[in-house]
Length: 295
Ligand SMILES: [Zn+2]
Image 1 (cartoon, protein in one colour):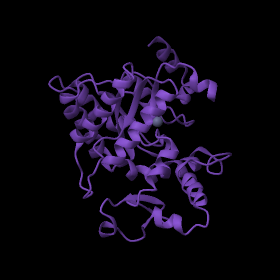
Image 2: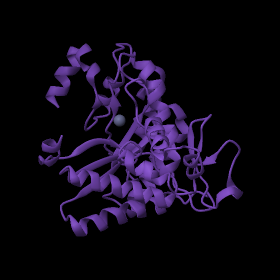
Image 3: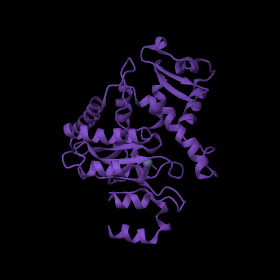
Image 4: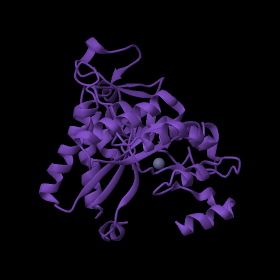
């Protein structure tokens, strides 16, 4: 790994905001007394103003750590809660792995929503990329997430401002560093959410035309709606000449399944996707393989 880290690399074209930060950064946040954990629900929460905001079932991680004879034991426990462990993946069927995998994101998502931590985690991601000689990063990002000390949403523009600041500050040290956002919708949340993400591209691009590179959607393909369900929304955005979403590139997650009844890959190619996320199902469709080679 040490040698691989040092090797120059072109770019990371597929990385997610919440999955990208190194686990030790997540862990270091739990030393801040405003970070709480619910052992039953298995979810982190941030209460910037402490106990007055706290909901039932949540205990400060700092307090929980004190219950352990060896604090490292608690840290190992949290690390295993955050990472996908061997027990949760090795030898299991895809759907069983997804059951653990999906929850890992739900678990940590709030840590990245508090505006101060959002910046800490983003900067850690950037630094980690640079340490591995990656200077071009495309970050898949579910936008409009950050909240303030009162846990009130701060809005998309404040969030994009933080992202732009992180990039600008990094560029002072590493002039060749580049990062863009692929705004990503969750299919599982449904059409209004996906529309919100497309609207974010429409609004965000007006102030930050180069920060947002395109659109994508995620979730376990075998068990969520296919891309075609969202096709009218995506096409409407791409065909709206008056909007910055006009001809908006897509970077579709597709073909991350062995089920031949799932045809997200076909939809992705019809959307002229610039890249395909995973796509290992492609071998089931020889005609589509030809089409992808051609493109
Ligand atoms: Zn992905």
